[in-house]
Image (cartoon, helix red, strand yellow):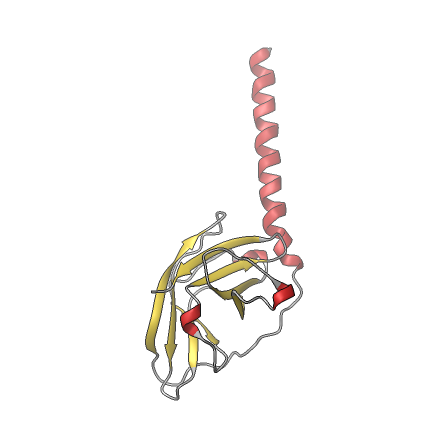
Length: 159
């Protein structure tokens, strides 16, 4: 009888863990639709300034490459390659440029270590226009952030 009780407890614990995982990732679906800063595609090919490979965080399955480059008209873009993947079925994931691999908001001081780039909703190739005048040398990482549950889904160190 002790063996039966342990098996039943193990089954219940597995169900609880699965339920909690679903609740955490489903919480991102409550995000309101963010404002798209600029969905314009680059003109011509991008002249690469820096790039990095995504490191997965919190089991979101983040992969792919982030590249910062300038198009043929001098507009700067952040681009994700065709191999880009993350947990997008959970809702909106917000993209930031950051001075470190850690999301550290400081709204009281205007978030000096973060630059909101915009939401990403598709796997694969994505482009985000970077505001003109942005000091790109300041930012060393791209961060994928799920604000509803306050966890990063991944980051890429720009080199």
